[in-house]
Image (cartoon, rainbow, N blue to C red; front, side):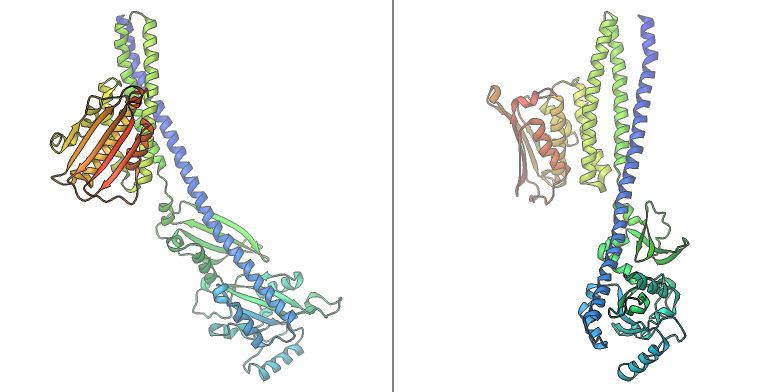
Length: 557
């Protein structure tokens, strides 16, 4: 017997250490998994927000392409479109209201030789705009000068007469549009409207062009020969991007990401079109990159998260998992150690190894059952406390664990058997012991609760006492709390009632919102005891009433 006892004394610490190591390893693994899951959740949310920008950009250009098509339709349906007709047409479009981001909408004439150029210049100078001239001068296969441009105000005026076919990037877009007969976009350009005072990013712009064809030409004519004009929309990328961002992200949402837009050249070079000012001294947690094509050009949208986004989407569930796991490991280790001690005592009192083994099996089942129940309760407290009051999580979580600890101490002292209700209430009001009997009056017969119901009611009493201290009868020097309970009837019809009635405190006002405390004193108690809860916010004092079958108090947990 002595050698067996000595063996168990040497063995038990190793078992306890092994249980602690395994539980902590599992806790760390779950914490890392939860942290990675939180990161993936944040990344998905960030990519969704970045995807909104790309979708809006594509949708915006598609909508604006319809403006070009309607302009082509105007010229095909109207025999003579002069400056006044064009001005009325663009004015009715209400670009600033319906198509924000467009700097202007122009009609560019297609001229096939120098004679047509001279004739057009002479006609416009004589009948429309005396200052009109082709710019820049020179010989080209075709000419595409800006003839009408609306709104014809401010910095749009210098663009009148500019031949977009004279510049390489604009010419490439015109050639593509003439060849395919569809909208085509230029590479990054500097708008004629912009002066040297603007920086390169501010001046970054693009044109989208759509040709107008003369349907009366011969079938043998080339696409270039059939063309009689272009409808051109002018975009300054900075203005367009800011319009899109403001339309999709109001308020603080604008600052949740840093956005950069690049044109991808055929050689793979990135040309900066738009770039937010990066947040100083900040390393982004999330990044997103989308490449897409529009009207013959490839663009790349890059976004990085800011501290605003990261704070708004921060998930701390991995911390809760870690704290819960550490607490569970400590509790489990304590229980296993207690089991070991009790096992040795049982072995000394036991008559044989078989009886000892049976006792160990029984105790291990008990530990497993109690540990699961306690862990589930702690996890629920942590989750609900975090959800209802994340700013004060640590303080609220600590108070509720202290309350749970008090009920655990009482259950342990009673060997996890039935607990007297008055002892339970007194343990939860321990910090008011000087007021019990004077300002806190407890009245009721001896009533026993099982372990599960004892935990539930103890947490409810804790929440009621906390609220009374903050807002109710215990927040001043004269308020009184009456706690009474009784059982009426006999047999299966017997009913148990518990009443918490406050008086003498400040005037009571019903809260606008409900937190975790309301769930503890309401839903949890109701479900555990299969009863009904009634709360009354009377001006003279708050009241909480519980009514349930008396048989619910002693049901096995």
